Image (cartoon, rainbow, N blue to C red; front, side, top):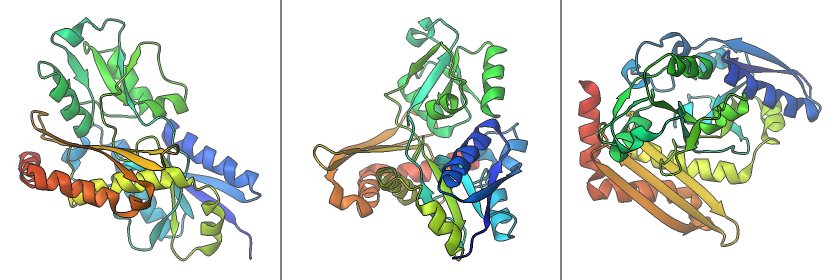
Length: 308
């Protein structure tokens, strides 16, 4: 088979470049030649609105999708939680790397007294917003956008009590501060902590090379979570959390999923164990449980709230 330089497309944020360089090193170690091509996405440019108000599914991935389709890059590396559940025609999931810490953390300023009273928390995530307000209904949640460095700086310069971040992102670029607590009660975004590599469906050389990076356990768990998301959402942004974990001792999948109203007052949860053999349709079936337990009506309400 012919050899070629695999061009790795990535956003130009520090975290995105870290992820691209990680994939580059793995491919280089396998004997492949690579180069990194950085591009800026609309999601990095438009920082004055919450993501859900921009009305674009996959705003961080769209620019790289176009670059791949136009032949400017061969693969793209993404935080998997940013990737739409339906990939563009002609683009396929080539590998899912082993997952890092999937949970969220609260970065605070050294004083947690506000947790028992009133406080102001920052996040640009609809899911984190709703989950936080469900647990702390007396708190105010404000919008926070930008790359990790920008968000940490905004927190430091504000009167906010804290801000919610994905643990994996801060750990990957050594930005996790001393003052934080792990939010193990908060169900993560589907596929949070995982990195995915996508490629063109007809590029056999690149697919063969990248497939060697795939981590099967992470692939299965993120498949379940994203299937759960896709079944609930139907293309709509909504406050949805999902986390699947493989228990190798019992050969089972442990799954927690949640759908909330925008204000966090309403919450529907599913918490189940299932044999690993059921993984291919597990996310679908668990989402159906939510939909059948008033989830359909809640999704209608969420969609109407987002249109306002």
